Image (cartoon, rainbow, N blue to C red; front, side, top):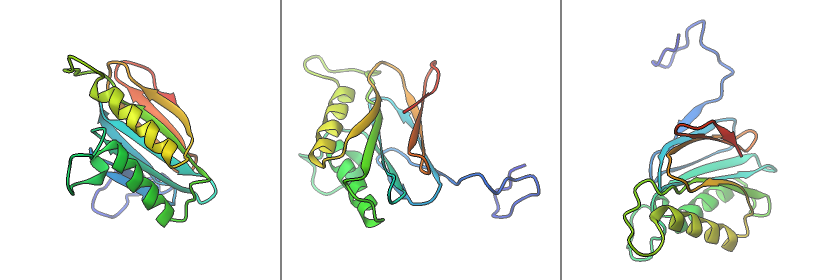
Length: 173
Protein backbone atom coordinates (compact mmCIF):
# COMPACT_ATOMS: atom_id res chain seq x y z
CA UNK A 1 0.00 0.00 0.00
CA UNK A 2 1.31 3.44 -0.93
CA UNK A 3 0.76 6.27 1.55
CA UNK A 4 1.02 9.82 0.22
CA UNK A 5 1.21 11.79 3.47
CA UNK A 6 4.98 11.61 3.89
CA UNK A 7 4.90 8.50 6.05
CA UNK A 8 5.54 4.98 4.87
CA UNK A 9 3.51 1.90 5.56
CA UNK A 10 5.23 -1.36 6.38
CA UNK A 11 4.68 -2.63 2.83
CA UNK A 12 6.10 0.45 1.08
CA UNK A 13 9.49 -0.28 -0.43
CA UNK A 14 12.11 2.22 0.65
CA UNK A 15 14.69 1.15 -1.92
CA UNK A 16 12.68 2.30 -4.95
CA UNK A 17 14.22 5.39 -6.56
CA UNK A 18 12.34 8.65 -6.40
CA UNK A 19 10.19 9.36 -9.48
CA UNK A 20 10.20 12.92 -10.77
CA UNK A 21 7.64 13.94 -13.39
CA UNK A 22 8.63 16.54 -15.97
CA UNK A 23 5.79 18.34 -17.72
CA UNK A 24 5.69 20.05 -21.10
CA UNK A 25 8.29 22.85 -21.29
CA UNK A 26 9.94 21.69 -18.05
CA UNK A 27 13.28 20.14 -17.16
CA UNK A 28 14.89 18.47 -14.19
CA UNK A 29 18.42 17.46 -13.26
CA UNK A 30 19.44 14.92 -10.63
CA UNK A 31 22.67 13.54 -9.18
CA UNK A 32 21.04 10.70 -7.27
CA UNK A 33 19.18 7.62 -8.44
CA UNK A 34 15.91 9.40 -9.24
CA UNK A 35 13.90 8.27 -12.24
CA UNK A 36 12.91 11.23 -14.43
CA UNK A 37 9.70 10.74 -16.42
CA UNK A 38 7.72 12.62 -19.02
CA UNK A 39 4.69 11.72 -21.09
CA UNK A 40 2.56 13.15 -23.85
CA UNK A 41 5.35 13.38 -26.41
CA UNK A 42 3.72 13.79 -29.80
CA UNK A 43 5.59 16.36 -31.87
CA UNK A 44 7.46 17.34 -28.69
CA UNK A 45 10.94 15.95 -28.03
CA UNK A 46 12.29 14.54 -24.79
CA UNK A 47 16.03 15.18 -24.49
CA UNK A 48 17.89 13.06 -21.94
CA UNK A 49 21.52 13.86 -21.13
CA UNK A 50 23.68 11.74 -18.86
CA UNK A 51 27.25 12.22 -17.62
CA UNK A 52 28.61 8.92 -16.30
CA UNK A 53 31.63 10.49 -14.56
CA UNK A 54 29.68 12.95 -12.41
CA UNK A 55 26.53 10.85 -12.17
CA UNK A 56 24.42 13.84 -13.24
CA UNK A 57 21.44 13.23 -15.49
CA UNK A 58 18.70 15.47 -16.84
CA UNK A 59 15.59 15.46 -18.96
CA UNK A 60 13.84 18.31 -20.79
CA UNK A 61 10.48 18.18 -22.61
CA UNK A 62 10.64 20.69 -25.49
CA UNK A 63 7.65 21.55 -27.64
CA UNK A 64 8.76 23.95 -30.39
CA UNK A 65 11.92 24.20 -32.52
CA UNK A 66 13.26 27.66 -31.76
CA UNK A 67 12.89 30.62 -29.44
CA UNK A 68 14.19 32.90 -32.20
CA UNK A 69 11.22 35.25 -32.36
CA UNK A 70 10.21 35.10 -28.69
CA UNK A 71 11.40 37.55 -26.06
CA UNK A 72 11.87 36.18 -22.57
CA UNK A 73 9.64 33.29 -21.70
CA UNK A 74 10.35 29.72 -20.73
CA UNK A 75 13.65 28.49 -22.17
CA UNK A 76 12.66 24.84 -21.69
CA UNK A 77 9.79 25.26 -24.17
CA UNK A 78 12.07 25.41 -27.22
CA UNK A 79 14.50 22.86 -28.68
CA UNK A 80 17.43 25.28 -28.99
CA UNK A 81 17.16 26.98 -25.60
CA UNK A 82 15.81 23.85 -23.86
CA UNK A 83 18.98 21.92 -24.65
CA UNK A 84 21.02 24.94 -23.54
CA UNK A 85 19.26 25.28 -20.17
CA UNK A 86 19.61 21.53 -19.54
CA UNK A 87 23.34 21.58 -20.31
CA UNK A 88 23.81 24.62 -18.03
CA UNK A 89 21.94 22.90 -15.19
CA UNK A 90 23.99 19.71 -15.60
CA UNK A 91 27.24 21.72 -15.56
CA UNK A 92 26.07 23.44 -12.36
CA UNK A 93 25.85 19.93 -10.83
CA UNK A 94 29.43 19.09 -11.84
CA UNK A 95 28.85 17.46 -15.23
CA UNK A 96 31.30 18.06 -18.06
CA UNK A 97 30.35 18.38 -21.71
CA UNK A 98 33.19 15.97 -22.50
CA UNK A 99 31.38 13.23 -20.57
CA UNK A 100 27.80 14.07 -21.58
CA UNK A 101 25.85 11.74 -23.85
CA UNK A 102 22.36 12.46 -25.21
CA UNK A 103 19.35 10.38 -26.17
CA UNK A 104 16.16 11.76 -27.69
CA UNK A 105 12.63 10.55 -28.36
CA UNK A 106 9.42 12.02 -29.75
CA UNK A 107 9.04 14.26 -32.76
CA UNK A 108 6.15 12.38 -34.31
CA UNK A 109 3.88 13.72 -37.03
CA UNK A 110 0.62 12.92 -35.26
CA UNK A 111 -1.05 16.22 -36.04
CA UNK A 112 0.79 17.47 -39.12
CA UNK A 113 -0.95 20.62 -40.34
CA UNK A 114 1.96 21.82 -42.49
CA UNK A 115 1.11 22.09 -46.16
CA UNK A 116 4.59 23.02 -47.27
CA UNK A 117 7.83 22.11 -45.58
CA UNK A 118 8.52 19.85 -42.67
CA UNK A 119 6.33 19.16 -39.65
CA UNK A 120 6.85 20.53 -36.14
CA UNK A 121 8.04 17.09 -34.98
CA UNK A 122 10.76 16.77 -37.60
CA UNK A 123 11.83 20.40 -37.12
CA UNK A 124 12.04 19.81 -33.36
CA UNK A 125 14.26 16.76 -33.91
CA UNK A 126 16.46 18.62 -36.38
CA UNK A 127 16.93 21.59 -34.02
CA UNK A 128 17.73 19.32 -31.05
CA UNK A 129 20.37 17.50 -33.12
CA UNK A 130 21.89 20.81 -34.31
CA UNK A 131 22.02 22.21 -30.78
CA UNK A 132 23.58 19.06 -29.31
CA UNK A 133 26.20 19.12 -32.07
CA UNK A 134 26.95 22.80 -31.36
CA UNK A 135 27.58 21.87 -27.71
CA UNK A 136 29.76 18.92 -28.72
CA UNK A 137 27.46 16.39 -27.05
CA UNK A 138 27.17 13.07 -28.92
CA UNK A 139 23.70 11.76 -29.68
CA UNK A 140 23.97 8.06 -28.81
CA UNK A 141 20.35 6.96 -29.16
CA UNK A 142 17.08 8.14 -30.63
CA UNK A 143 13.50 7.08 -31.23
CA UNK A 144 11.91 9.86 -33.29
CA UNK A 145 9.29 10.32 -35.98
CA UNK A 146 6.37 8.14 -36.85
CA UNK A 147 2.78 8.91 -36.00
CA UNK A 148 2.48 7.73 -32.39
CA UNK A 149 2.88 9.26 -28.96
CA UNK A 150 5.58 8.35 -26.46
CA UNK A 151 6.36 8.42 -22.75
CA UNK A 152 9.89 8.38 -21.36
CA UNK A 153 11.66 7.16 -18.25
CA UNK A 154 15.29 8.22 -17.68
CA UNK A 155 16.98 5.94 -15.18
CA UNK A 156 19.51 8.42 -13.86
CA UNK A 157 21.75 5.86 -12.18
CA UNK A 158 22.44 4.08 -15.52
CA UNK A 159 21.60 6.65 -18.20
CA UNK A 160 19.08 4.23 -19.75
CA UNK A 161 16.17 5.91 -21.49
CA UNK A 162 13.09 3.70 -21.62
CA UNK A 163 10.66 4.72 -24.37
CA UNK A 164 7.05 3.55 -24.24
CA UNK A 165 5.20 4.08 -27.49
CA UNK A 166 1.45 3.99 -27.95
CA UNK A 167 0.38 0.54 -29.23
CA UNK A 168 3.99 -0.63 -29.42
CA UNK A 169 6.51 -2.43 -27.22
CA UNK A 170 8.88 -0.48 -24.98
CA UNK A 171 12.43 0.17 -26.13
CA UNK A 172 15.50 1.05 -24.10
CA UNK A 173 18.04 3.44 -25.60
